[in-house]
Length: 419
Image (cartoon, rainbow, N blue to C red):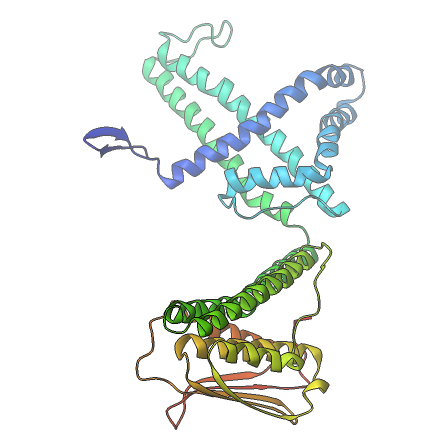
């Protein structure tokens, strides 16, 4: 219901209740169909009249007239974009789920079901429009005129004003109830006609899952690659600022490292944008992603940023599957970034063992006072997601010797969802 509310000392109408708003939206949907019914009635009135007055038996003339009316509507509904338009109207006005987008028709079944829905929409809208245009004025006249004379030709409504008022109320209720039933029926039927077959719904669900997986992948790439480079830029810029007056040569070295890190950030960003173009179906235009064969360069950038990294590599890292090597590189990159961010200048030991399963262990000293840093724990969550895609495990936390330890195991034979 619509009430009154006070706002800044003024009385303003309150918003209608959700049930009333939904009912009004359904009436709008029906009246849109009624507008099409009126336009179609003007255009098709002559051929329908010819069929009805042609002398054909009614059992033949009536289906032919219905076919003449329904065929153009079904043809319009068979257009590919009609499904998107009808789906938007159904979501916004009938079901209240406007966020559930419906794409254009791509199969013959979708075209046929959309055509049927458009026919039902227009027919129901025509009935609702007739109820509204004829029923409500008749109810008003029944209640307002003294004897209701002239409403039904020479016939008069028997009884007094009370009888006419009761008939007016019944007629008004019938109009509202009829529109409500038509709206509820279409609200129940339309999503099923738009949803399509089970196979089509399954394909749509798989496409949605694939889209979400692609977004997660891009988010991880942005965080781990570009975030790593920007963290190095932050650390080096801070070091350069502190050394600018005391040790200009060291400050210049830090600024050069900042420049290199920023350049790598641009390269990584170009790589991620290439992945984005690949996800959207465009040309990738990006070089190969780094993997564990680039471990020395990664460790070198961390050392240039002030980390004291000791590295131990055993096994044939170059023989690892490409997907495992790429994800392992990103895991090491994130681990070194976290060490620089949370324990700048602390000693780190990185162990990579490629015998059987790939095992990575990164341990770093934790200083007594860790500078406050921004972040919401996305790094470790991203590491776990990368390892989970390869059926690996991640363990992170304080070790027995007081160091912070990141331990990762990736099965070399694993096949993840990444390419």
